[in-house]
Amino acid sequence: MPPELDDEHVAAVCQVLLDHHVRFVVIGGVAARLHETGHATVDIDICAATDEDNLTQLASALRDLGARLRVEGEPDGVPFDPHPDLLRQVTTMTLVTKQGPLDLCFAPAGFADGYDALVGQSLTIVVSSVDVPVAALADVVSSKRAAGRPKDIVALPALEARLRDM
Image (cartoon, rainbow, N blue to C red):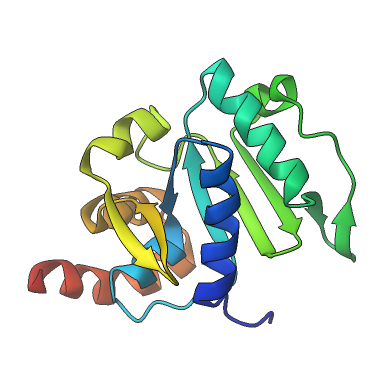
């Protein structure tokens, strides 16, 4: 199993996205961890806005990150052109970057409207001096519940306990 993704890698990926003015929120396991749930994860998941300008900015950021498609048996990934037209056609994409694994998810489980549905309740959490936009813990819990994958079901009790304590 790959090592857990640390704050420096999260901050580095997010800083590149922010430098390119990408509108996004961190979702998934990193979002859960940043809400102090103790959740461990090996990649950063983001949900980005899907308008033309944002996809253009995202494509540029992915090039700067040296993004490659994550493929089993290819630890360094395989090259691809992160063009806005390609990004518009996918709902998820798993990548390897110079800063670690990155997953794009334009319509997370339970949030068909993606970024637009998540941004309103999101908050900013400072990670290694970077202001990172993070999905609300309630939205992370809802998405994990909707996904229903075994790893999400196992994580739910701790996430729900943290949510009750907030």
